[in-house]
Image (cartoon, rainbow, N blue to C red; front, side, top):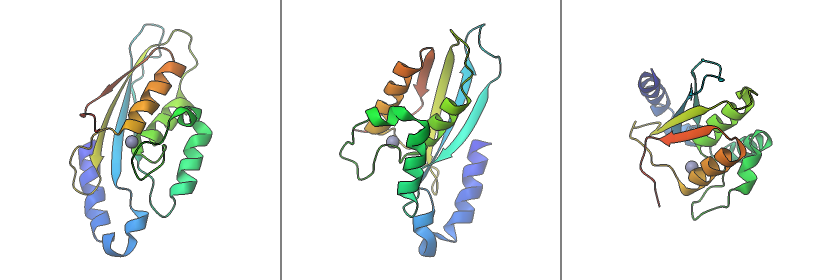
Length: 152
Ligand SMILES: [Zn+2]
């Protein structure tokens, strides 16, 4: 379903790339949250997020920071974008907002990110790796698995 959605969005956005490139996200990511303990609600949940668009970047990042205070712990690396720009930040913000407040609950969070237009796998950036680390530190019982190689 994730791949089908990527192909449909790619087909849709390709016709607008020349005039509206600043309004089209570069990447999309899938986050699947699997309960991994008996104390956890046995509902697997998933979300799809998108990278911030050039046109609304500041507002999008600010909105993500309001939900995901772990972003303040992430330092800017050599990339030309701020922490919170990536699609991962959107899905982590969703996860944080919907996290059940069960003590001792354990989850496995699996992510996979694609280039929105061409469908190729995108490596996790250092900022998102730091964000993942900060999230695990804040929410005990979350184990993360990224299905991509790390990008220096
Ligand atoms: Zn990133």
